[in-house]
Length: 295
Image 1 (spheres, rainbow, N blue to C red):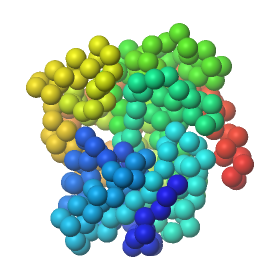
Image 2 (spheres, rainbow, N blue to C red):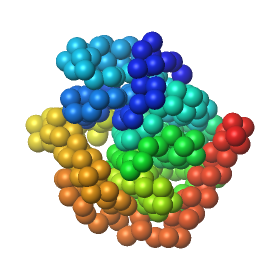
Image 3 (cartoon, rainbow, N blue to C red):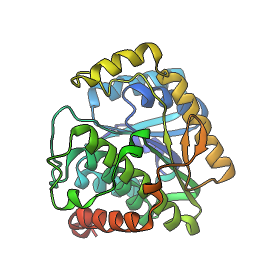
Image 4 (spheres, rainbow, N blue to C red):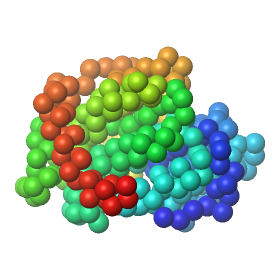
């Protein structure tokens, strides 16, 4: 983990955290947040991309306090380090936007041995949310917003394969679908668990957006090329997400799935309590060694 030189400007402040803001929707959303909120903390992986974009935001919005942490969100140890740092700095998280996500070009595993797509798209937002919560770092009436995908509708919800490492027969696209279903199931689980603490938890599908996610991805790159002409722009999607964020905060809406800016029904599988409970137990098992070491 690397820490920005100006991180102290966010100490003792109520802060909005955004992960994955170096390009696409995240970059556009960062601009809207910087314009409308006073304290922003960015968590990105690439320092070389992050520093100039933070400098640009500070130049555009000089009254906004903006800082960053550089971390690999596939690494559970780094997530625990950064959440402990947030606690140490007495940063109070008012909004957490788990925007970072991957559709890897190659198969891989995290440092903890978790399949890479599952580690970034599911484990990372879960661990960020729960560690900030257990550290007492959320402010009152706070919001967690998770970037999801309509891809979850085609997931099966057999999450045991990630615990037993039996996922090799799944395509990378199917792994992505399963990770997004897991992310959505956990959204509903945490919405229920955090309800008494005045923390609302929701998920959104950003729309069919022209981003770099599908570039250089075999035959899927042709879809990505087509989206440059027919897909929603990152800018319009970011505006839609910002409106969702504002609505959820103002009305304290929780446990909802948004698509095209509206509350819609997610897959039947995502509401299945048995599948949710199984996922929760598997997730605890996949993160327990790291969380226990740092407890």
